[in-house]
Amino acid sequence: ITMPAKEVKTGGIHPLNHVVNDMIDIFQSMGFDVVDGPEVETDHYNFECLNVPADHPARDMQDTFYLGENLLLRTQTSAAQIRTMETRKLPIRVICPGRVYRADEVDATHSPVFHQLEGLVVDKGITMCDLKGVLEQFAREIYGKDTKVRFRPSFFPFTEPSVEVDVSCSECGGKGCRVCKGAGWIEILGAGMVHPNVLRSCGIDPDIYTGFAFGIGIDRITTTRYKISDIRLLFENDKRFLEQF
Image 1 (cartoon, helix red, strand yellow):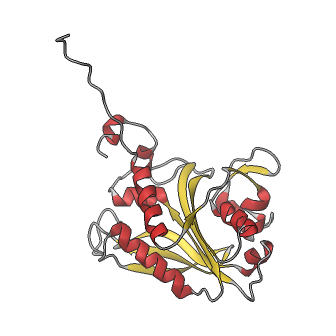
Image 2 (tube, one colour; image 1 turned 90 degrees about the vertical axis):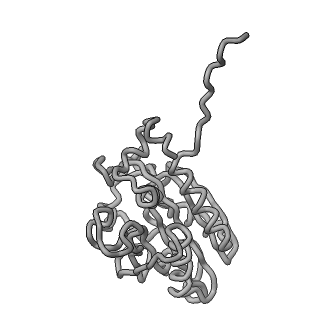
Image 3 (tube, helix red, strand yellow; image 1 turned 120 degrees about the vertical axis):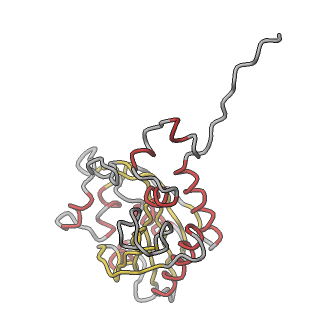
């Protein structure tokens, strides 16, 4: 009875889950609901309804794993947004966190399995100003109140106009360092106004309703927030790494 007890080790929350929980709290405080969708999707929801027909070159950027002619592992959680627009009454304000898949080569910044949180707002009178306000608030909640946000023109088939969103490097304050590769900025997400074709495919009149959407790489937020140099560390389950969190 006097022998020392066996040490009981208590588990902790994975850094990815830490970030997901924080992101959900931030967007819920702005009035967003959380929705989910299947990881095995149909071509219809993953591509066709998102203004990416079978012959669209944008499919090359989202090469994924097919389970049949029309079944595939989803390349983005935008498919859940389409399902939401088909089933929910307007106005809509939702976020869709989850795991997604693409046929990427594994390296320090890419993985065939990664995580996204996508957001969608559809209502009357929604403009680019609403999108900028939401994303600027999110960036300052995640990285700190002094964070600067930059919007650059870009292209996504399901939004028009489209932007890439960068934040000032939290390590150097925008001066340039190893973390931001000397640029002073770190790209964290893509966004834009929902394309009229996407609204029409869900039975929503784009002459009456407008909306914005954004997609955030949770793994990118995690690695920049915790200064993790290699994305593979998040998936290797090395206790020496995970015990730091």
